[in-house]
Length: 603
Image 1 (tube, helix red, strand yellow):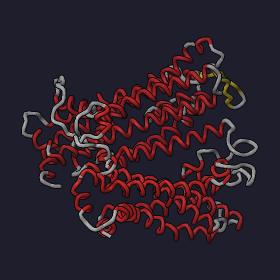
Image 2 (image 1 turned 120 degrees about the horizontal axis):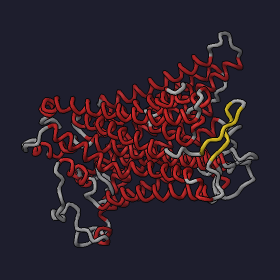
Image 3 (image 1 turned 60 degrees about the vertical axis):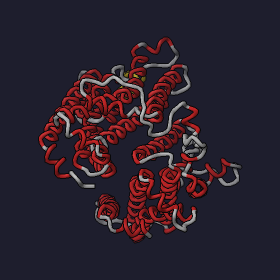
Image 4 (image 1 turned 90 degrees about the vertical axis):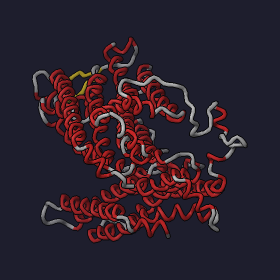
């Protein structure tokens, strides 16, 4: 009751709910308008329009639920940062089960309210025909199970006390990464004919563990076929024959298991308190020869010329967990990139599988690095305002220009090793093509058809790594300066992170879609515009013919002209991003004192 009553009074929650319904309504009207432009329509065409509009808003609903659930649940994870909240709860007559379920249901209420509010909108599509009522309720059930699972994970992390307030964005990244990886694996299995059905294009083992794929199986039973009843047994019959039932049942079971475990540990201080012993140091820290958390002693370090830049870069590696997380990403990314190229070199992957694996891997690595950049920059100043460090820094001779420049330099210094992972992956693939396949049996060229003629193109552009490097580093700097700007203007870390993600996400989607379309439809200028988006650059490097079709087809230079335009565009895009970074940073310096004074003393 406390969570629901307090959350219902927040303007932010009202705006989120309004924006959620507004997005669904606009997409429904837009799809219906596009589907009925022909004038007079038959009942069959109206039914098809209704089915299409329902499918679009059903996918949008799943996406918004997966996007908003971590936002509503972020408070549960952040609550761990204030142990006094738990101290008060543990002194009440509430049982562990009541504490756990109260936190879960109180925060899950807002997500379930969104689903309930969208049911009348789904019901409107039945007026056109072609939309069974059963599909409406099942699609809502799939979304509700996704919200339940995400919420249970957030509550478990909070009550188990294995993370802190700064893990909110890592939780968000994990949800997005999981959905992207399972979707990419599903596409790869289908492309290699390993799905269900005579053509291998049906459901896969990933369908039942991804809500988007589960919804796809519900809405496309003829093209995304399931296994016939009785043809399989055991887990296969569940995952491949009943993916919807498996997703809903599995989500509920996992949620129950996490809630039971959380209830069993809530009065023990969570997982972090188990095995601490008389010394007060958890067993895993003793095993790694680490002292108690928050110990005052640490080895001396060499400080850079700009102490703000050094502190920003060094503070990200101040704990064992952060060091392990950073180098695990770098190590796994390097091994995965080498593994993909090696698998193609020895003939384990076809050209289409090789391209798909590279595209999915590099895009996922760029996405994770971008999200890390936004999270770090969006908390760089607001975190110091919350813990009082900013007040101490303002008493030193450090000027606003030195402070903000140091923040940017420190952030970029920390992100460069992460950005090197996708760059190295494409560079290895490009060098493999440049070296002629290193004498292996795998071909480094492919004959692509363009109309009536066929041209020989490399499977990966040899200069792919260099072009991505020219694009992604300035793009990360752009993300950092946007996050830094909102961090300076926001009172708290969660607000600055949400605002930064929304703005960078919106800009990236618009620029990415425009770059994607321009590359294939505009001559010469298209590849130049493609370089404005790292995702579009990766696609152009992996599949140049489809990404730069107009330039290759309509110019005398063909692929050579397209490659030259893409490289020139990477330089231009990098300069544009750096110019935006410079102008934004100058604006922040000019308004630094006013912004800091305006937010001084606010909590």
